[in-house]
Length: 311
Image (cartoon, rainbow, N blue to C red; front, side, top):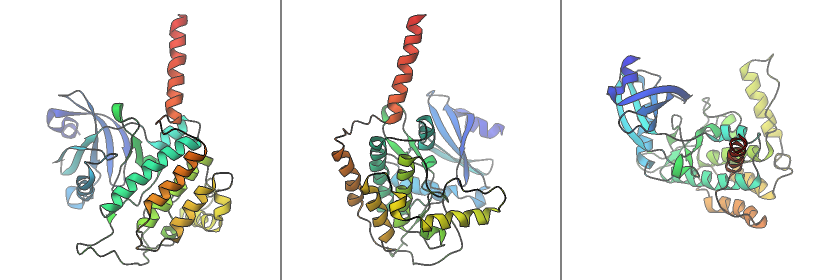
């Protein structure tokens, strides 16, 4: 590990902060600039590496908002490594920080950005295929209100070099998160743009309600395959009305729309954004980027200051 830790004497690895589909991610320090960086190290030897594909996808879209910039890429100890902009916490951690529930305002402000990010990917011929809160991070410092999409280890292009959409087919290979994946993904149907959007819909409902109906199923005495099947059965048999009970009707319309998209149909992203913005208008919210965690951090800082003032 000494060679990797040194990274040509320019970067220092501080600690492991995550693990993607095909690589481990570390918090690092640029020894020259003294700025933090994220260092992704391939789990496989270079001849079996998947990080090259991920790097190529990042290169396609890295100049856009909400996409981490690549600082350096190279090979050390026969493993692909790339160094990226260091980001803030992911939405899963922020959700936990806020008591496992987000307000409608926060969910809408997040949702608009998620749709912007996925539209960007789709416009560049990329399916993410692993939509979940862990893969969305907020930026740091001046970018703290920007939601970033990360981890393209399971991503793929949905059009070939001739511009033809991939063919509809059934495959036994599952890709993604069982909690957030589309019903068709459970069935083994080739993913397309509609599946990323269905996953976003489930994620927004999860943020708003704090739980999805297929969460928390008992699995201690059953094998993983049966547990996955149970998730699918509950997901398939939960009506949209039940799924979206107690929350604005626009979420029901969101799920309805994405589930009725044809395999190769171009989604109407503006329609989905308009559903969310309708809620914003109805509640007379201001798009001020004051998220639930922003308020909680402000309160924590005020409380700390009061403690200091009392000393």
